[in-house]
Image 1 (cartoon, rainbow, N blue to C red):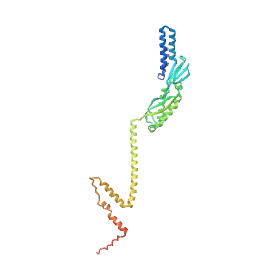
Image 2: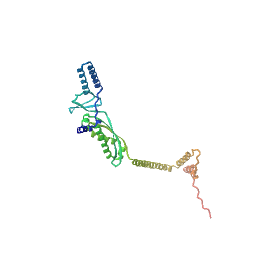
Image 3: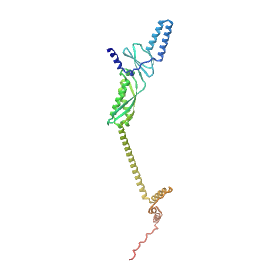
Image 4: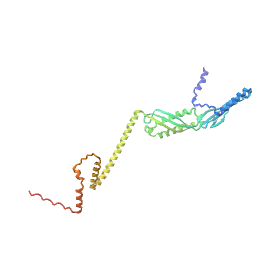
Length: 315
């Protein structure tokens, strides 16, 4: 029982998600199949030594001939020491002495992370969802400097997100998404650079706030809009009053123009059919410019004589 415990304990500590088992590529598979078929045919004929040689060659080819895709990096150790990092193409390793410990994907990858009930600087709990775009630029560091770089990126991203939320006001977090994204990118990139990982961008997808706070913010926004509307209306009234003052100054020096304007207003009003307009007789008299115009014309020519003064009647 003691032996079983000593064997199973290290196996349980291994994270199998971080291990990518190399598989045989099509070229290796074809060569192995050819050697096995040739060995089987040779053994059927009766030449056992040649058959054994062909089968041994098939095993050696399967263990030594590797092929990496254009986006892959193979990290190879030789007797426990770093031997090389192989890129795209076919390469050969020495069986037993060499071992592929990691196959690193160099393409851009995404990791979603979130922070639940994180408090902002003004003590408001928020739920934030974000996504990070990253890629491995140094396969050697990603394989040797850290046990599981994928899990480490997720942990670092969550920690950085909570730190950013704690140092930001809610209003800034809601309005300045670009600035928050750039801050997260810099912080996460500085922490993952030692692992051979570069952060391309970080994007905050959603910021959820409590329902009660949403109602309060909605009322505040509505009040701000009403305030702005009242300010605009007051500015318009002030501008209109200024125009009225200018018009009054013009009409004061030109009474005939005022009368013409009044007559035009009445005309525009009576254009609608079926409309009944009631006007005082004094207003009608004021709109009759004939007497006033005639008096002004005669006065300018000097033909109007002042009326004789009437003597008081004898008692």
